[in-house]
Structures are given as C-alpha cells and as structure tokens.
Image 1 (tube, rainbow, N blue to C red):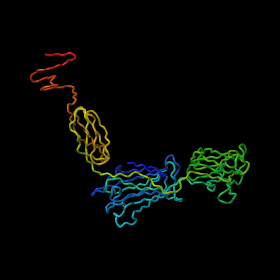
Image 2: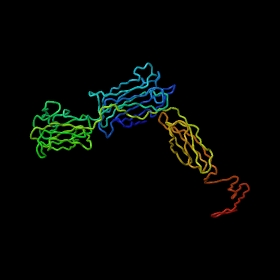
Image 3: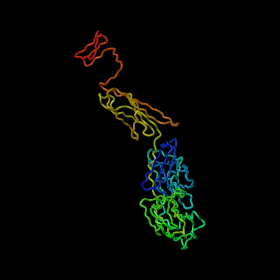
Length: 447
C-alpha cells in the first residue's frame, strides 16, 4: 500500500510504501511484522530543497493508534533501519526511545529515527531526480486493529537569500590566465581582471544549488556602449554545461543594472561573458542575486495513518432481508465478511459479476437488489489471495422468491393441468381444452 503525504507546510514530498500492503496485527501465538519504505523527494516543479535532518517517530504500545508492540518478546529493539540515497550520500541514523532509558519494553511509548547527511556542510540538496529512502524493517505490529499515525519532521530550507560577490566560484572561466583581483582587498566589493582578457572570457557566480532567482544587481567595471568593445552579456544556467546558458536582461551601456524578475528564473549559475574584444580591464564592482527563500525550520510532514487489520478471514450468513417479495419489488441482500483484503462480486441470472464496494468496517454488509419480476438466485463470490498471490474464490448463494412471477420458457410441458384465470383450461388427463371469451390470432387447429 502506498501512502502519500499532503504538502501543506513541508518542502519535501513523502511517499510511504508498506510491505505487506496491509499490516496484520499480531496474535498471542504469532508476532506479525512489516516493513515501511519512506521515500523523500523535492516536488517535480519546485526549487531545490536543502535538508539537514529527517525525523520519523513510530508510536509504541498496545493501543489501536499504536503501531509497534511493546512486550518482552516483541518490541522496538527488533526494528532494523537502512538509509538509501540515490545520489550516493551517506546518512547517519540515530534512534531514541521515549522515555530514553526504559526499565522494560512496556514503558516505551515511541521510537524516533533521526537521519542526518554525512556532509561537510551538515546539509544536502534535493534536486531533480534526487531521492532518499529510509527503510524500517522487521517492525513488530501490536495486537490492536486500528490506524497508527507516524510523526515525521523535516529540517529544510530553500535558497540562500542574497548571494554576494564573494561567492564567485571561478576567476575567468575561459581564460584562467587572467584571474580576478579584489581591488578593495576585502570580502565584499570590486573584482577585476589583472590584465586585458580576450573575447568570451567570463566571470561566473555560483548560487550553490538551483534556486528561483527573482532579481539581480550588477555594477560593471567596463567601459559602456552597445557598439563598443568589451560589451558584456549576462546569462544564467541550471547546470553550467555548454548549451544550457540563457541570456538575461542586461543593458551593457549602463554601468548599473538592477532587475526584478516578474517570474522567477531557475538558475544555479549566473555569468558575465564578453561578447566582443575588450579594450581594457574587465570586471565588476558588485554582483549580487536575490532568490525566493524558505528559511531553515523544522517542518511537519502529514502522512496518512498506517492501517492495521485482523488476519482472520470470514464469509458467512448470505441471505436476503425479504426472502419472498411481490412482483416488481426490490429487497436487500446481506452477509457477514472480512472487510479488508477481500473483494466481493455479485452474479444473478445472466448478469455479473458485479464488483461491490461495501464499507471497510466489520459487521453486516448490505447490497440492494433491482426490482425483481421472477424468482432469482444470487451468487456472491468473495475473492482473497493466498501466499502465492493467487486468487481464491469463496461462494455463497441465496434465492428470492417472487409472487406471480414472469416466466420465460422455450418449451413448456404440462403433465396435469394448465389453467389461466378460468379463461383457458387444458386438462392433460381428460384431454379436454376449454376456452372462454378467448380470441385467437393466426391459424388455429382444433381436433
């Protein structure tokens, strides 16, 4: 079974797969176990998401809204945890019970798994196609039928806000022989080349990850003029590879360019590239970018509850509320059956099978019939699956008798007497036929 989290306040998407699809509750003689695959990704159309931690808490105890058993024979210590990252990033998983140091398994009310990326910065970026899966296996399910809700939290952020000039990732990408120098000798201002670079030289600003750029502020250090030499072009790219750069609004005749974008542009890199041969030094006095940001915060992820059902199968007492009805009258069928992991199909006459959708609750199920005009036998097929995932059929039937029914027959043979409201009588013993006030259409032969 797949459960998808609603994305109300979270930045990441979460899909939870449970194996088996429906968790079965344990019994006094057998501990039932299950596995959860919790996969985190960024929304397909959204910006990259930075993540410092993912925290998953399972409720422990004997109640219907608990998931994990809390006995000496089966408890939270039995659970195995495995991280799986599509980008190959290593993760550390720390587990802690509530309370932290219980004296017995029955005291535990929750177990928490905290996942953190093993990176130098302490965070990792979820970009397109990136996924992280936390696998929790050998979960001992408690004995109470019900729905258990997990508590899940992400520590995430989007963007870095204003990205200043000191975060330049390169000197001159086309010509490293012309490095940038910080004229002001500080970490915040003017950068220029140490000589006159050739055409196509560029200065690149890295945002660290793909972010929705909403504006940029550039003060160039070159001579201006649309037709003059040394004219720079502003471009952006999501990955920095050849062919990915897109031109952005930039007026090379102005030394100051301050733009606010009506629609954010996805970008990881911005660069100034010389489109003509320069006549002097090339550089910038200031280069900064504004991105839409979500600051670091612990954000809850709302995942639907994990269902726990009884492993018992039952199917019995298939009958009708009115076993005898008048012509043209409907009734209702009823039965007792397993509400989960069972599909029901109803057949009658030459109709069916019709799939039924009874409520997924224990107790008596009902299904209305159509208006009946003849005595009808209904067959109910309860379908389950065995350990080999093969369909197993279980059949019950019931018959509803209709008073004064319609009769359709290809051949009718009467061995005694056929009488229709004293108007037409055919007696097979006396060989006499009596017709009173009867009209015959077509050819009639009487011997």
